[in-house]
Image 1 (cartoon, rainbow, N blue to C red):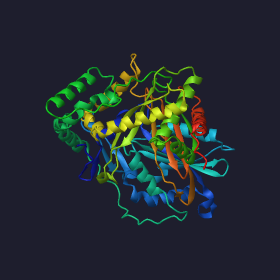
Image 2: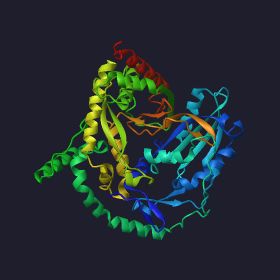
Image 3: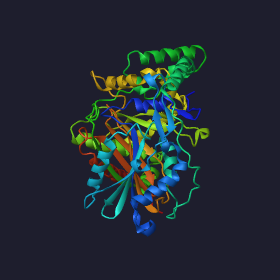
Image 4: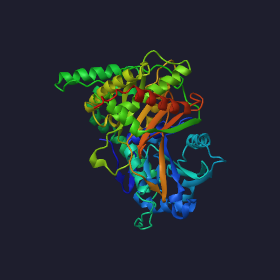
Length: 500
């Protein structure tokens, strides 16, 4: 089982957390975030200043301990690093403000977000930043959060955001803590000793992970380019069946992702696109097409149609479906309130090869139903178990080699893009008294997977945030427009209810 340890006041990263740090390079970062639009007229005095904003954040730090945690790495990479309370925590460094030039248009806001997101976080400090962006459309305010994926996954990120937000314009008061912060910083010799102890336990962790992980290796897309991995997974499945372990459920692990314009190595720069769809319209499409179609089916089908339109416009449409990575939480009820990562990346075809939107929606429903069936037959901690096979000292190089195999030497990417749908609250939220108008996710892209479409429903809207490589998808905002076009087509094609 993966570790989320507190040893003598020190919290150790799990192997899955460490993956998000290991994949970072000068071109590729591992942080995620959100762009929120606020109406400051509901805040005290009808405005939201940096000082007032910082006071609320400072008060809520007691509810979100990870915002004080700083990464401390083990010498020589002998074991995964640790999170310690930063004794030199500086709120002014983490909470900043900027002003957009007049008129503060959507294009100006998207460009500013793209520039901020492209910059890596400082590993010498707690791995998060928040920006207060003034002058959006003249009188609105943007709040852009950045936090490293090594600290949070989707559910724990939502818990942190919930701690910072309120249900009414009135700013709730939080009991202050004791004011004592900062773990004792272990010295080099102590860290080396802990690293050697962790190294000694490595064979035991591997032995525990082998029985459940080996038969499912074929479903781990990141390992697909490594020679012999799929054959080893099939052999382990046969051995398991020979010992009465039952068949291994296979999903879409064997799908090959075609090359697209966003399948190349990344540049250091990003583009960001955002916009909203009507949740009522999405639900109307779901109800009209029946047959078990879900809101998530509609969202994924819309993404397939929008990406298809973009590929057609750029004369780059493959003759077979793209392959989407769809992150899901495997966090158990017992793990609620903990941080770090409890996720798995499922694989599903993104049916860009189907021209008819209605046929695409039905086929998407069938594909996602098969994906869910696969999920039920797979170990919840599969990604963590597989991570145990790599000694911590080799983690970074192994992760970088896996992505190099996916994007270079004629290899194929593990996925073409990420598509994620996050249900959000359907009631108004407030930050420092200012009403939250929209919540646009800002996620991560990697070599070979230079496009990420994440949506979050909030207060009757489906808020879309798209991150792309600056060179690979220069017109990312057009994909948002294509989503609206696809929704309009599905709405008009919906079967009409018979008149009474």
